[in-house]
Each structure stands twice: as C-alpha cells, then as structure tokens.
Length: 251
Image 1 (tube, rainbow, N blue to C red):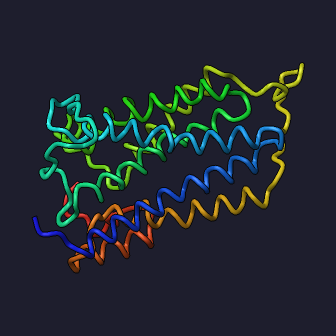
Image 2 (cartoon, rainbow, N blue to C red):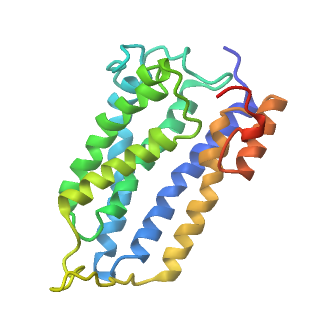
C-alpha cells in the first residue's frame, strides 16, 4: 500500500483533537459539580483513557473491525491481523487504530457526567472497562465494522450513533440505576439546584469541546488528498450535517 501523507496527517491531527476532548469533559464536569467531588470526577475522566486504551488494543479493535460475523468481529490481541479491507485510503493501520481508540475513550467518558457525585470510583472503573472492552466494540462492529447494520445500508459519518448514542445509553442506564444525587429533591418532591463550584472552568471545558469537534467531525473524512474530500471537510467544519440535504444524491 502507498501511504498518503495528507490523509495520515489529517487522521492523526483529528486523533489528537479528539483525545483533547478528555480535558474538555474533565473541566466541564468538574466545574459543574461541587468542589468536594473535583478529584473524583477528574480521575474518572483520566481513567477512561488509561483503562480504555489497553483494553481496546488488546481486544476491542479486533472485535470492532475484524472479519467475523454480522454480530461480532474477532479476537485479535494487540492488533496483529490484516485490516487492509477496512482502512481508509492511504492511512497506515496504527494511524487509524489510534484514531479509533480516542473515539472509544470519548464514548466511555460521556458516562462520567451523568453519574457524577454518586458513583464509587472503583465501580465506575469497572463500568468504563466494560464499555471499552465489549459494549462499544460490538456496537461499533455493527456500524463501522461491516456488521448487520452496515449490511442494511446504515451509515454513520462521525459517530452520532456509534459513539454518542452508545455513550448516552450507557449513561442513561447508569443514572437510572444510581438515581438522583442525595439532596436533589426535597421532602415535597420538588427539585433543588445543586450548583457547580467553578463556572469559569466549566465554560473553558465547553470551549475546548467545541474546538475539538473540528477534529471529531472534520477528520472523519479520513482523507484530504482529493478535491471532493477537501470540499467535504470544509462543509463538515461549517455545518453539523454532512452532506447537506441539497447535495445528497441518494437517501
């Protein structure tokens, strides 16, 4: 395979920006929670990546992109197999692997905010590990790995289902199990505001996440070596939907 410098640099730049979303999530969540829980929420966001990366490299990537069945890829420890069939044009395996790794970590870290201030740290680590090891890779195989949804023609350009819906559903399940924070509702059943302790940090986290969306969505073109890809990247930077309805050639 002949590698494309433009495509590879684009994918790696996108991976770096998506990784930086961890900082945005950590600051946003810490700022909107109480000061006493700052250490807990920061460590959860840190451990999402520390736990998720080795598990995704050990099992997740193979489960997600390996040639298996419509439901499951294959077990391929440390990504040693042949993935040429799923690699973007001109992008080396490990450039694409790290790009997918940071997407996995983002899916896991979505959960931490929904379960803030009422989750034991060790229990959260187990929950995060399950997402990176099994839940995200299996659902990702259905969508991006040639699984049953892909076979039906389902298309997810930048992870609205593969990443965000999976993380959101896991967050909803966790929040439902845990219930509201202690003191959230009074004896009369009316909700009480639980204010964050640092709005400046929270706002900075939001701006970091906003900035990193350019890598999350824009770099999902996984290429910049043609006029069509360059045009697409510009459209993605400019609008949350791609391609625009007036440019679609098919449903």
